Image 1 (tube, helix red, strand yellow):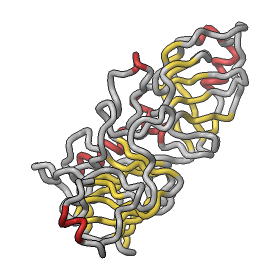
Image 2 (cartoon, rainbow, N blue to C red):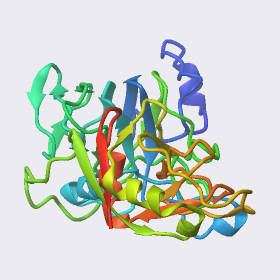
Image 3 (tube, rainbow, N blue to C red):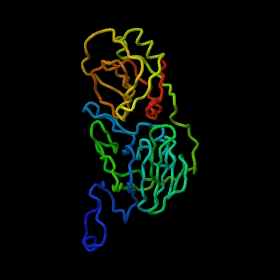
Image 4 (cartoon, rainbow, N blue to C red):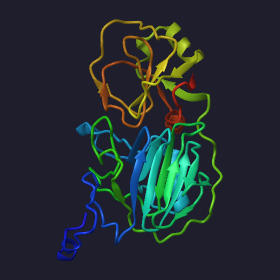
Length: 313
């Protein structure tokens, strides 16, 4: 927020800035997005927070890195520009000044001032226009990117919200005004970009066994690679809790805490694995039976509760 000037203080009829507005430029002089509704969960995300694992700080960043990167490419934004990640739709914003946006990821119904629009499309919003994301028919997470990026202050080099560590910008709330950065010099090449559909009732994820597959019986490894697992409602950006065949251990005891990466399939004592996602802890003491390949993590990030997952070598 800009410092208050004598001219500002004289304009007593202006409505006050909401107390929970994030710091940024004055919306009368710079473009911004006003949050009207957030749906089940909306966070600010960029490419992530790199190089701080030794300090106990994870990468975080967009859960579906493919859809996030596509949004910035559509708008000709720099690769790391911050966007809004909306879970199961419900996000509603108002343009403060004219802005150019796009929506990627889950197939959410998009409406601009009540008129239908499309995902993966360049959308020009005049001052005061309202954009709404409905509940997606498939997939879980949608990305609303704005040309210039969401310019909230970075924390440790990233504008990502890490919900586990509590780092980065606070979760947006209705009434917040998010500043938009300067538009890049490049311009979008296309008005609409064809893209693969995300989500679905069944997802196949490629894994590599280990590093602790020797903590499990041969029967458990066979069950992991032949059975179906279902994403439960107890899932979030930290990880997807799975229901399915319990994995039997071949030894007793617990491990000392060791490093964790996104894609780790950690197995608590109950035997049902947890698939770590973007905001996973950097260490853990339960054994990791396998790790999902990083190229498949965007598919995992779009697996909504009820999705069936099959793990393959």
